[in-house]
Structures are given as structure tokens and as C-alpha cells.
Length: 397
Image 1 (cartoon, one colour):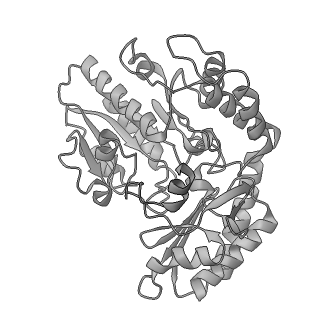
Image 2 (cartoon, rainbow, N blue to C red):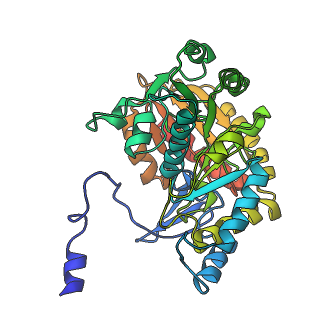
Image 3 (cartoon, rainbow, N blue to C red):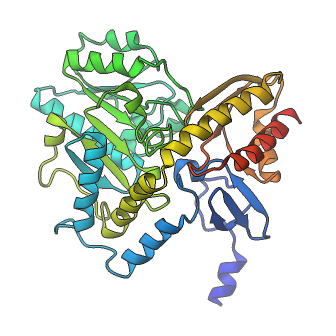
């Protein structure tokens, strides 16, 4: 009876917040997924920037098995060896002082917001305000939803938290105009706006914002949930700017599919959370930390960043070469393996592209009028050739 009930009801018991495409995947390897009928699909999204090392990476799988046979979970009331090891590695890599582990990017960003609030209290600011960017995305908790600069994501959830002001992205003057606002305590940005369609700012934008924050004693918070963990060709996107933020948020690729978030901080920001001020039941458990440590090992052992940079140049050149005469293409934006293709909606119906791509065995994302791709960082040149052919077919037919 129980089995009949399960198989006789498909999605009837799921809440309707998702509208999944009509395909179910049963296995994956590297850049490829296989559905219930045996058809293979090229995953040019990496599970939305999560499986950066590809599906079922053997070393990651080994780490899951290894730790699951020892210990899955203990409370953070006790010391966790693998958590402490991961904290040391991440802080060394990011030039940070301390880290708080959670389960997702939204929770990492939520932690950053709480740090900013506590920082405000030290400055005797009762109504702290954080500047964030228009078209940004920081998560779906009430605080991170309020920080997000996208009204479509916020629709239906008012009243939002009012302690955020959204300014134009890639416009330091929009930030400078708040220098005399005594309630501003932080600026929170994505180095590259992913959900907006891979929007890449001017090279010195982050440096200019960082300078404004230092001048005004504001915290500089970088949300690298999507742009971090090698996605742009450096372990963290802000490293292109030779700066270090006060707070750095990570998730997605850190666990390669196992849920983990991390909020790193340095200096004064790293001293804000005191015993009892914040917590997470599952955050930093032995399993996820063991996996994240192995992910970091793979980056070093397999020269992942070298591959990202080599493949990025090839992808950029091939896209521009093959799409230069397409009337549908407005702009090609590539940073590492964050790829955005801006389209002219007067010549192409973007609403149909997701389904068309799926039918051709290709997984992509459509963000407004842009194709967004985040392929696994282990992608080969031969696989790029397959991807390019599928994209050309998608756009030109």
C-alpha cells in the first residue's frame, strides 16, 4: 500500500514554489547527467554553480564514504576536528581571521548581516543600514531577501526589512553619496552579479568601493557564494583586485553538492560573534567539513584553476568567433567559467530557450534576456566544443 501510494502520486505533495522541467536525473559524471530513460544531458550549470568539480567526483565521493563510516554529526557544543582544520585552511587561503560554518549561501549572508548589526551597536548606531546593489541576489531568508535588489524575488513578502538601500551596481558614485549618512555600517556586494545574468563590473570597481568603506569605517562584505571557489579563475573573485574584504561569504562549490556555507571575517568584524550570539545545528558537521577539505585538496592536486583559465579563454574566443554575426546576440560576458550571453529579445524569444535547450540535452539558465552558464570547472576542450555547438544551434534556430 505504501509503495503504491508513493509511485501513484508524483508532485501532488510538494509545495508549488518550484516549476521543474519534466525530466528526472538518476546519475551523473563530470559534466554529464543521465535521466530515467538513459538520455544524457550536458550540465552547463553545475547544479547552479554547486558541483564545480563535476558530478560524482571520485575523490569527493570517497571523502563522503570515508567520513560517513566514522561520524556524521555532533553538536557544536563540542569541538569538531575537521571543522577546525577547514577553518584554518580557508582563513589561510582567503587571508581572513575567523569563520562561521552554516548550511547554505543564504545563511552565510545572514551571518554577515548579523555581524554588521553587531558592528553598528559598537558604534552606537541604533538604526543600521547596509548598502547593496540593484539586481543583486543574496538569498531567500527575510534578511537576505531584503538585501536582494530584485523586486520580483521580493514580491509577496512585504513588509521587508527596511535596513537596506539598493544602489546601482558598478557605480561607486552611487555609494559615495551616502558618506554623510551616519546610519550606514556596511556595503554588501557580489563581485560579479550571477543571478542577474553574469554582470561583470569595471576592473577597479571593487577597489573604489573598498576605499570608500575604509574612509568611512564601513564593513566591506563580499558575497562570493557563486563567484567563489574557483568559478572566475581565482579561488575568490576579489583576488583579481588584490584586496581583502572585511567579510567573505561562501557556499555552493565549497561542498561540491554537500550543503555547506561559510562566513569568513577579519579584524574587527571577526570579533563580533560572541558565545550565544549565533549558531547552526548542522553547520560545520564532520561530514561536510571533510568533503570541503577534500574539495580544497582537489583544487591543488589537479590544478583546477589552471584549467579554468585555459578553458575560459577558449570559451570566450569560440563564442565570439561563432556568434559574431548573430543578430540575436548583443553581448558576450565571460569571467573564468561564469558565462553570460545577452540576447536581443526583439529577434529571439528567450522564454522558449530553456525548453529548447533541454530537448537538445543541454542544461542552461535564462536570466532576463541572458543565457547564463556555469559549467563544471573540470570541463575539457572537447566538451567545450560540444557545448558551443549546442549554444549556436539554440540561438540560431
